[in-house]
Amino acid sequence: MARKAPGCHERKGLSPVDITRMFPDDAAAEEWFVKNRWPTGARCPECESRNVQERPTRKPQPYRCRDCRKDFSVKTGTLMHNSKLDLQTWAMALYLFSTALKGTSSTKIHRDLGVTQKTAWFLAHRIRETWRTR
Image 1 (cartoon, rainbow, N blue to C red):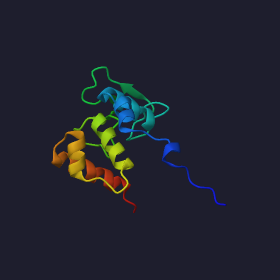
Image 2: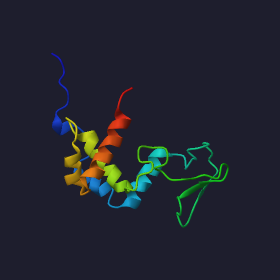
Image 3: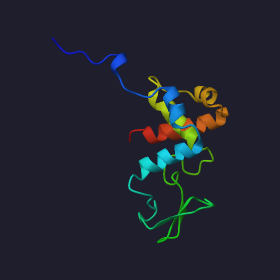
Image 4: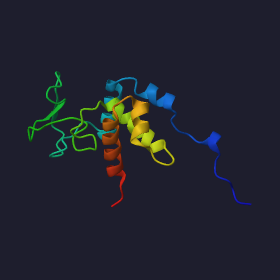
């Protein structure tokens, strides 16, 4: 007899409540993105140098490469690049898109995240573009 796949009660995953606890504010979301993008410490996206200075004022960007003298953040060079949205909103949008069985519309993102429909469309477009197979 063939063995059955695990049922819903045996699956591990994150619930919406877990996500809101995981990212209660933008600082927690930024910490998570930094830890997952650079597990061994910040690295310049331009020249891959580890000689990076973290700015205390975080202006104009939180990091500065001492080798190529470029400013950058955890968003630089990712789907979040040049976005004025906070990282908490990006984290929630990524969760909603990755857990939806049949896709997610921009109007649903608009309602769930409390952003404008135009912003929700922007989020959806960016996420779908990065997940597109070439």
